[in-house]
Length: 117
Image 1: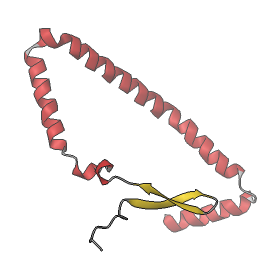
Image 2 (image 1 turned 180 degrees about the horizontal axis):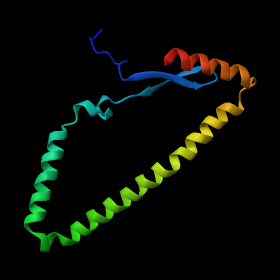
Image 3 (image 1 turned 180 degrees about the vertical axis):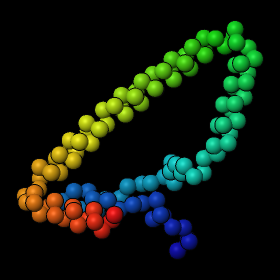
């Protein structure tokens, strides 16, 4: 044996009909949010903001683009916040519709609420 472990990048998977196939996993493609350096992003943003405020005439078109993206994002967040209660209502209604004995479920829910209270 040469001491090289060639099996580490292979992960077993199913190839269909119970056959086992292996998928190659490249460790260099894994992304870990914990290893991201956010201080660099923050400093870059501050420096760009300072430079843009020092040269308002030259950066006016970029400021308009950034303001437009901000407005669009705020409208999107507002729509999500306004329509999410409707979606949550229908998710809960779907759970209620699947219950066979409504009285028993309400009794269990009441016991849970008294216990957690």
